[in-house]
Amino acid sequence: MNAHPHSVPLACLSEAPALPEAAGVAQNLMQAANALVPLFEAGKPIDAAAVRAVMEEAFGASDTSGAWVWKDAYEAVEVAQILMLARYGALMQRQAASPQAFLTMIERLASLAPSHTRRSEDSVRLQQFSTPLPLAAIVAQAAGFREGDLVLEPSAGTGMLAIFARTAGARLVLNELAETRRALLEQLFPDAVVSDHDAASIDDRLDRAITPSVIVMNPPFSAANHVEGRFRQATSQHVLSALARLAPGGRLVIITGESFRPSTKSFQPTFQRIGQSADVVFSAAIDGKVFARHGTTIDTRLTVIDKRAAGERETAPVEIEAVYHPICATTGDLLSAVLTHCPARRNPPPCPTSAALSVPNRQSRTNLYALRNAARKETRARAEERARHPFDDVVTAPLDYLPKAWSVPGVALQDTVYETYNLQAMRIGGAAEHPTALVQSAAMASVPPPVPTYRPVLPKSLVADGLLSAPQLESVIYAGNAHEAHLKGWFKRGEIEGQLMAAAEGDEGAFRLRKGWFLGDGTGCGKGRQVAGIILDNWLKGRRRAVWVSKSDKLIEDARRDWMALGGRESDIVPLSKFR
Image: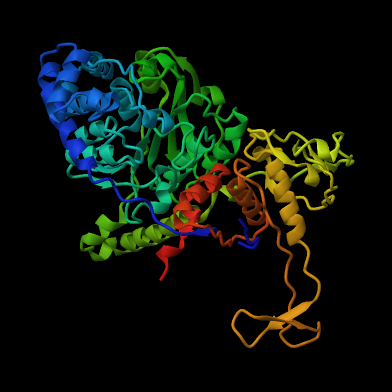
């Protein structure tokens, strides 16, 4: 695979269409949920036998036939709880004498549902752990939903957070990548705008007319679409993209892993970017047992971020203890912390659109012009913020390595076919070992490699986090070393399109060609990750256009996976099919 060094990556195909059976599965889950509602209304604990019975009735088959899995059953239970809140949520709030009393009612409802004791491959791979109902109620308290709010939930799941916003009279924009969950949302919230984007790049993908006043989210903590294994940048991508889309003066409430705080080294660049446009006003860690009934016991964190209005200056720094609170052992403790320490939402900024709809009298015309000018400034500010890329603020440094004396392999050439592969010309300090064993032919091992002089510019965290192994970094170095040089001689275009002819240096239209570099690694070496590393090196030096050519248009997902693994946006990979 070759990559031109002067290159955003281009590839070739859009996302696969939604599965046609998703709507049918969602309809069956709705049937099962409606059958569970009377059990919730009666206040009866729902056991696995009751869930199995309604699922078999809805699907016409048992789970052993493969018609449904227990993850589907748990989602039917969640939908039943949402239906309960749709019917009785407003009444429960009116009857509750305090937020603590309302939380007690929600906890009683949640306690009737069975625990999630079985997982599916998708739920583990994509970290699909729905927000427990009591925690969702506390998120709603922190968000301070108001009637007329436009609320965005980028990873909406089954709607456990969204139902509280709708109960408050807010308008909803719900995004969900999973087809079945998205079909459920369309049935549960028919008045909502429902989309199917990757929430990690929600600002790049959502309709530009949508500017939410509140965003609530429980994104995957360390998983990403098209990325295999643990992806440490997942939380940062979700938070920064959501914050970019949030209207000035709006509020973002997030559930993340407990480590999402400025004292965690890998999140420090993220909090620096947050601080450019917003203020963290509340954050509290949550004991893992709060999520236990939903299939995980990892400690989490609730964070509230208020985006500054257009023209509003950064607030004076406050004591970190006033914002970041100790771990809360129970939902009751968390609610108390929110009620005591989380500030109320700021007054919403004036809406220029609604003001312009009214006919102003002579005295109010000046105010209307001021509103229009403010709206233009906000639009420009949002455009500038959206134009920023995650790599714009990343801390970079030249990759440090030392030359290494080459020695002839100790085994005679005729005694072995393959030699263990080790870096022969350099030593890269702190670089991770390759996750699998690598070998090279004994003949190649007997030839000394050239000693490079090129030093790539890469994010400091890339080597520390082991995103590229030492052999992969070696490829980035050798590629840059080649691209810095030119082929011998000068050339000019021939009469036939695509033909080159030898030329003298002084000839009209004469030019030189840069050296290329051939990557001949075999399966398991991570060639796509190496190509992404070469493009990243050039990107950070200002060369942001790359053409990534693959054998098949199906490999666009592999390109996206490798580029995102190094911190890039999925939207950077632009399929050629999008252009005429």
